[in-house]
Length: 369
Image (cartoon, rainbow, N blue to C red; front, side):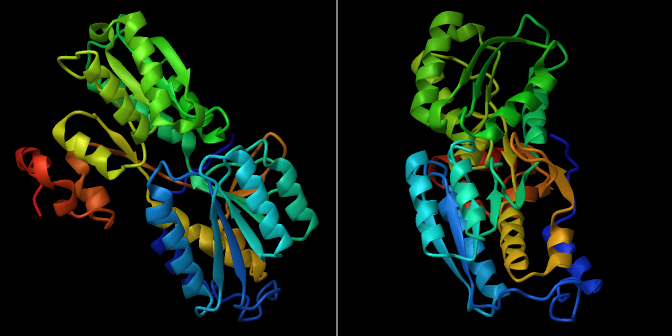
């Protein structure tokens, strides 16, 4: 996949577009006239509830931004598939039958949903792949730079092991779901940093990203490798990182090895504060969600100049080439930059992170409200 990472913040992008007269292009007689007014319906299909981000950030942010962009006349038709690909296909078919104006799709199974994407295309409904690159004739794609996510995770593990890291260090890789194309990109990015520097002793593709599956896989790895022989664990996300740590503790680990994560979930940030988890990857969900909402509205209202400005990258899926895209950058979250990331962006308050048993650990690392 060819990537050009976007490093400018959404607020800066919005300002720059406004300064060029792009955001108002349709209203000001730009290259395209609106095909719809503000009375639009955006179908939003999210994949699961195990990861708290979808209900806490993505849905409410997209809903709020759609309202703001349409003078509160636009609405969001929301459905969550709860990690069930067949359920998501049925939800999407229902939205097609209901003739929503545009669909934001975060696919459970990127390959399996392709036929339904084609049905939307046949019905004249644009589909924007959100967070995961779905197959089929999608109109655009927005996500984080997924290869960079894996690179950041892999590089962080090597840094955690120190200058003495070598192929005698045994690493367990707990990858994401094989039906999620992002998982393969995370894995590829991580391997680009780990290969030749350490030994990948065991590697698992975790069905449905479920922590219980990751815990079972980790228990198997511990049995085969030995709990004291595991130098570090690559975990593709925070939910699985918690399960990995649980399995290590159940096996009697006296000192936890460095464990990676992704998504900056609250309990993961707390584990980072306490030293149980080494790092997570912070991804600005507000930036991704707001940009997705702007892309959806621009697409259906025929604001071609604005849409093109929001999709300056190009990616390839297994079925389509040169898909207009926006790839958002990511940050390694460690004890050192909690204040500059999740707190500064308003994701969490210090009081939330440092609640209860984490108060002392917060004081120790200098995290204060």
